[in-house]
Image (tube, rainbow, N blue to C red; front, side, top):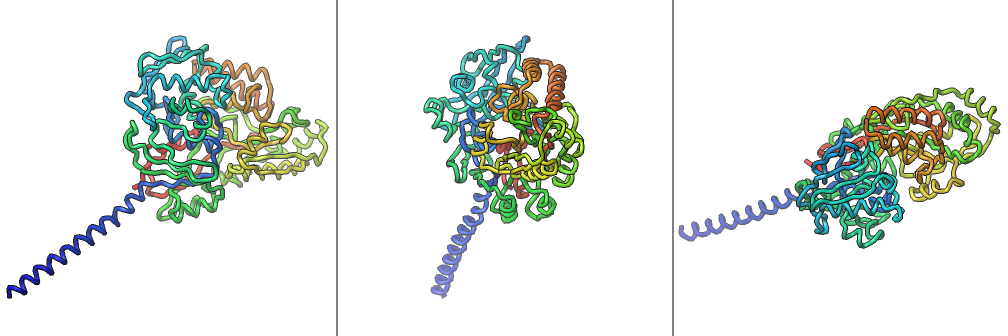
Length: 515
């Protein structure tokens, strides 16, 4: 009996050991999905060409560096100013001096301390006209100097009041604060790896491949909920939707309207439809005959049935444009609409001496997928008007190079976002006569004057009245074919929470998690 008891004890111990080992294995296996859930895959439409926050304007680049490099203030989902790297601020009575109190104990992901001197170095870089950086026009013409008072107080001294000053600082392009250490390494180092203070840092980026972010576990705002975020460039609509449905992607940009209902009915998928401060238009090269005549440009506007475009082509999910900015913009006012009248448009062209069959080149960025239907619609409409229209989609870099040379295009399809959620930057970038980004080559001294007046007016009601005059004059001059106000459709797995999408449409991943 003793031997049997001993034998049974040994067997029991062995069985217990096996159970413990199996339990341990099971625990490891069950923890794997939890670990996997800390990774997020995002399928976007466009590829970045540089990550220098002070020297780029394309949305694809902004979306990457805004994840890692923060601004002094930010925008919430409603477009309101909120504290970020600056915890408080005050303005002088004359509106020319702004004093900011900074967050304390913050570090860049290379270990460099964030302080007032770092802020000073960043803004002196971008506002130095000799550096010829793309984002110089935002504050460069208005910043007289920037001074510090200890480690955590920085003062901006402006040569004039700047009405949208806080909105400009909230724009994560040109105002992102990056490590002084990487700035000292030169422009090539910055464009590859802009080191910031954000919740994530870049683990890998190179053109043509995935962008991988890893968590900044020492983030001053609290440890991020994700270990890793991967951006994949997937231009094809169907491919992005399939990735979402199979779980290969957790978030996707630009869900086609035809897929929205199905994804919303899906067990694991949903679509967030958000009105944003973006207008889609076809810019007209004002330097090329016959488009140098306002009546010809107006005729192009009359030739497009905007109601059919928005209701039929986009299923009523967008709105007909009534200004250069959308109704989400704080400075919006209704400038009017060009009603559809093809016969009137034809008569205007005849009176302007435009011959039927004229060849016209319309270019578009290949990554602006959701806009392509509008471009095709404009092509067909202008062909009915009597033009021979070539619609050409170009890779983003080629598109931007083309716009730099007015001899290479007649019309261009583009989306205009008031990135500061204030009409100032759309007006300054797209309609100020000397702006590098005035691709319509539009010139009107009266509009220039109104843009400048509005930029230095601190009273919001007065600013709105000034910009209303500018809107109406631009509408009459018709440097664009005004199409529609945009709504974005973001596809996501139902276990994804916390994505913040301001009206400026730069996704904020700081609070994103997977349940």
